[in-house]
Length: 113
Image (cartoon, rainbow, N blue to C red; front, side, top):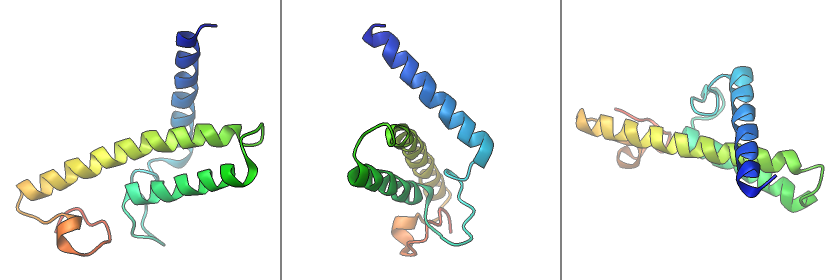
């Protein structure tokens, strides 16, 4: 298998993992319920990434953490989507005369006020 085929295979595996987790958990990563935490999706995803990276730091990269690498890649994709969603929401709020989280001082991820 050449590099191109390996890239396609890994990206397909990542896509399948993300879709499987979306089916299992819904949109919880991109639309957090906000029961225990009021973090924006992007902030919550960064915390999840920190946890995954800490596991790799503690255990190393081996057969036991191979799934952790795929999880990190998945969270990176989710983080890109969350950042895009939040940017679009902020721009929409500003166009409607509202304030964005970084301008209202709340720090709780409100996207419109």
